[in-house]
Amino acid sequence: MGRFSYDPNRLNYTVNTPATSGKEYALRLQYRSQAILSTLMGLLASNYTSAIVGPNYTLELKAVAVELARMELAIEDISGDLNWGGTEGQQQTRSDFLYSLAGYLLLTNGSIPNITFSDESFRAFLLGLLQIYFQGSIPKSINDAVALLYNGTIKVTENFLLVRQGAAGLDISDEFGFGIDLVAAPGGGFPADIFDVDASIRLLLDIVRPAHTLYKIRYIFTDKYVPNGPTVDKILDSMSWYLNTYYYEDFRSYWNGIKDRDRLGVKVNQSVSGEEHSRDF
Image (cartoon, rainbow, N blue to C red; front, side):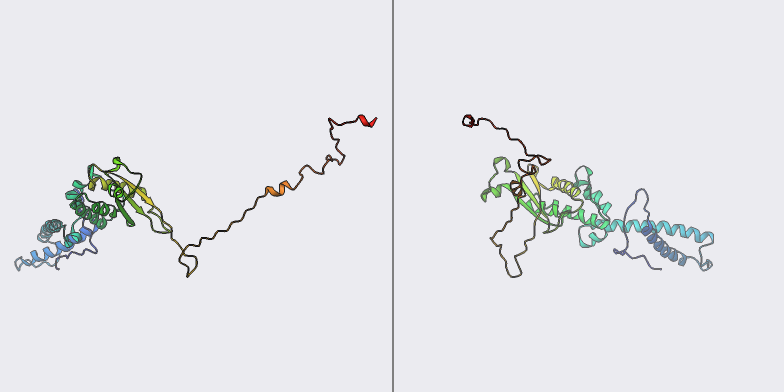
């Protein structure tokens, strides 16, 4: 049986301390040890004719083959980890190995973004962060760092450039500030885990931004403009409105029943004061 070949579409290379384990690793170990055992059996003298693993010498050879297979697999994994910067390295380098070399040094206080990563996506995240780090603390690095966690439209603005363009509301205290606008898609919104994304973005900004700068993150919602008809591409300036006031009918009604009559229909006496009655006598 030939050597077990590397299949990036199937195998998940991981390191579990203190021992390497897992279904995929067991499969690799089984194939590799069988190949080594076949080679060792072929080196025996002709009087060793056992074709199955049963006699003591075959059991001993199998144990040797398993340990040799473990050593070979470990060496292969390490050799694949060494070239993690190129295309081939991106396919083979184990994420935990890459984190111990690069991620632990880049991410402050050993913290990791509070976002669910697969093995492949976490490796791509670390490689992308490493490339951004060596670009330097420039606006492009800030944009690229945010793009690692947010797939929407991103706009980075620097305050001193806004002032040069005539922006108002800024003074000398905003000289070393910048803003990050995260624009939601028209008619859409932001991810459900946007609060975790926000905290993770701030974690990355502390790595790539200049230490003396301050920033604001703004989440901008947009609406999609639908023209007034299939052929009209401009907004109509006409206006129409309708007003309805219920209390107008109240003014026209007498809510105390029949005027000058009590509830039993008897005429209500009207109090009179100040009338002139001297001529009645």
